[in-house]
Amino acid sequence: MAFSPAVASAAPAQRIAAPSFVFARYASASATVLYAGRSFGRAGVVVASVQNPVSLYRELIAGAYTQVSLGQQSVLVALAFADATDGRYVQTYLNPTLKGGPLTFDATIEWYEPLERSATRQLSFNPATLLVRVERRLALGVASTLDVAHGTTPPRRVGPVAEWTAKWGSFRVEVFHRTTGKATEVRTAVLAGF
Image 1 (cartoon, helix red, strand yellow):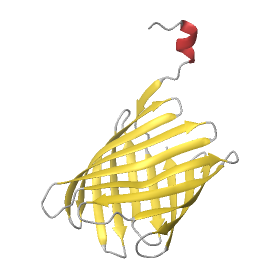
Image 2 (tube, helix red, strand yellow):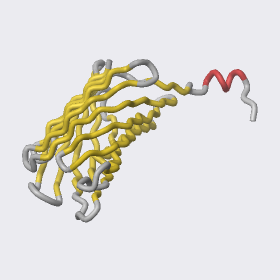
Image 3 (cartoon, rainbow, N blue to C red):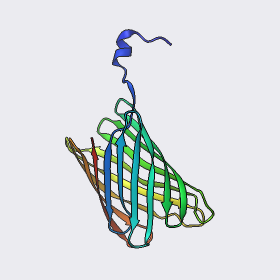
Image 4 (cartoon, one colour):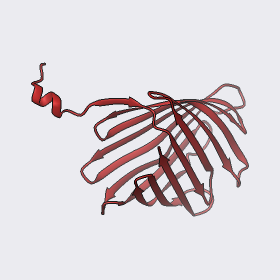
């Protein structure tokens, strides 16, 4: 199918780039995380630390990432190695961001593939969020998490979320109702891109 020059120039361009970023999240009843990504053009390197003071679980993570964008839609993809309390893993991350009008859907999807017998295969959606922009910088919505691991009952959380955006990035507050452990969890997150 051929496109006319007018249609082709109006179509959004596909971009492959790896923006540098810092992401930090504090959680009152689960893991606190810190990720830092450094761009080298189309790809970047990422290092991270995950700490859960309640369960004493921890992860140290290192890997590579890139981001594919088409207009306002994007998917960040990363492949990493994790040294965790319960073993070593290869991790795959998918982070889609889909926008349409005032609505934005984003998710962080992690697949943990064990490298040793003590480790457990896992799939995590942490979080999946649907936001509605109510003002130029403020969006409100709902967030949910689901963590699936072999031999366990999947813990789920759901609750309201508010996100404030600025030129440097965003600040987010999530309040989750939990099906396990403490009934309520508050999480705050900062994402800065450069």
